[in-house]
Length: 233
View 1 (cartoon, rainbow, N blue to C red):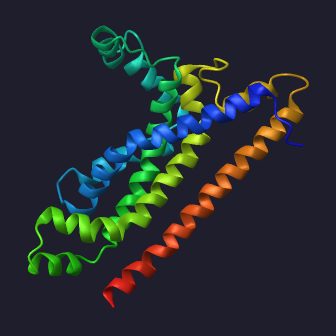
View 2 (spheres, rainbow, N blue to C red):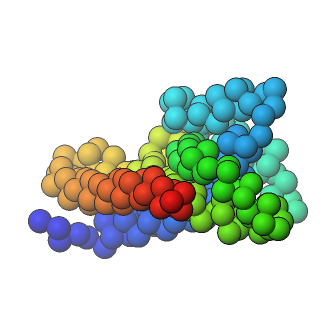
């Protein structure tokens, strides 16, 4: 049932590559945003939180359209990258990474924010009282305790990136071997009279990957309160 063609394997491999790179690219930004939202109070915090969730509630095609306006050859960011560095991301697999990162960022930030907020500040204060500096406290107390949630957020972001379709096809189109990820390959197969069987196989692959990611994230989330309570004891 899972005898996949070379083009199917290419689509799966590209989706995995896009998903992994999108997580790596967005991870530092997501953690910085999550930490600020979890620990800093400022007037525009509700607006920043709402803006962060926009990719989850907007039609993905809208997000892809704005990415095309920004990163296209005539867009402000795209023109800058091409003129100064000779880099083009529109209609390239790197553009698919950007689209996936934007769509997965809210899930990553939400998971990280909850994880950071769950860290008992009394433990941080105790570390500071015992002589640990701000950065040492962060790396020895805050980061280890929030790590399971951080990883869970990254895994959910990967799952979202792996299945991204609307923003990707709008921004980088459907180019075999370059931007045809797994969801786009399924869509392309459904446009052909005899593509149902192949589309079913790829859909099963997508379900397996998404289910595995969700289960892994759930396991990490279940470990978080146990680790915190153990340290409190």
